[in-house]
Length: 458
Ligand SMILES: Nc1ncnc2c1ncn2[C@@H]1O[C@H](COP(=O)(O)OP(=O)(O)OP(=O)(O)O)[C@@H](O)[C@H]1O
Ligand SMILES: [Mg+2]
Ligand SMILES: [Mg+2]
Image 1 (cartoon, helix red, strand yellow):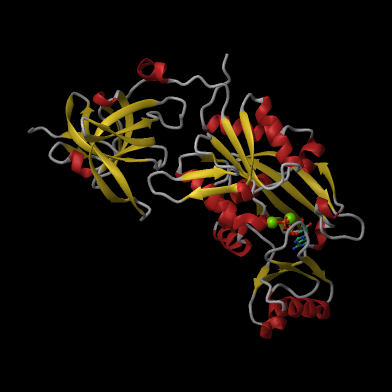
Image 2 (image 1 turned 60 degrees about the horizontal axis):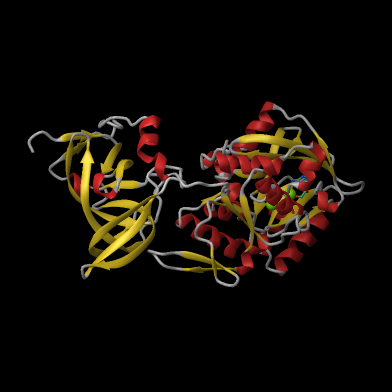
């Protein structure tokens, strides 16, 4: 061929012999081989030679449209993916159609979804045929929604609702009850998944998650990740496994992991220019006095890095008290931070509930008399409150910085303006739903429906 086809960074391609007339590919000359996102891969023999059968979801963010394909296996190869891991993949050879042209290419089958693209076009398939202009996109033409409907309408699986799992610990908890209720109310099939009863098969080609008794959890559409702090390590491993199987998670394993590390997340937030109370962190007991000065002296707050629901937060009213609390915690080898005490907050703080980059509800929590911690578990009371633009922006920036789609952002009102206290990746629903009367659980479900482009059947 003399004239080379100029392609952009993404293109609509087709694999006629696989029954896939249109699929949007990420053009990636950095990758050697091309890959196709395939599910439920299994092998069989035809006339004595190895074949594979697999399912392709040809449309991005849509797992309802399924095309079952078959192809002869030409090889099994170790492929290094962009995240550095190597997996053994089946290789097939099939005709690629690109605009007016077509030729045979090799494709590796992987069940790893690379940023929503169902296929990656690597340089081997492009060689001598294509040139890439990374500034362009869809040079070979756009495919309309109607065309896609005509291609794939008959491949849409009838579905009454999404299959949603709630990955958590306690099915009796108000938040989990409400999420299950809301999912069912929206017409979905919902299952409570106790993290302790999930176990996984670490396999590059066929990763699996099993549930107590051996039930396979691979066909879920979405998992609502409600991982309690004490289960962060295992819970995030499970979330990661679901993600690697192409299952949508509300908060991703990465976002949860980093938001659980209080110190790390404070560093990330500060780097983004978000305001927090003046905070110090140390390890050796020698410098206690300077550490206290660093945050402006007593009264000050000492926080255990692993504390939750207010349990690890202490107010030291005097310098002497501060020294003894810090030294006591240090002797226990607990990680702690010291923080300026925001006295003018008067035992109040704000909890902003963020979903998909929107503050959907906010409450003000007020500490019980004689208490400075506003946690509802410590007897604090919740009330509806209006927040300022600045507070709203702080909450949204915080959730975004940590990559959380669902977050409870705690803000304290100081004389210097709003200061960020912390960001929770599994915010409780009881206090905020009760005080505001809003259906927050329903909003979480709606957010999943939007992400998966699910529409209520007429
Ligand atoms: N620097 C501070 N100045 C004044 N009050 C504070 C300060 N830090 C925390 N508080 C109060 O103490 C409460 C608990 O603190 P914080 O939210 O940091 O820890 P936590 O509640 O134990 O953590 P988690 O919310 O993860 O369970 C806050 O809600 C707030 O009312
Ligand atoms: Mg808190
Ligand atoms: Mg916290």
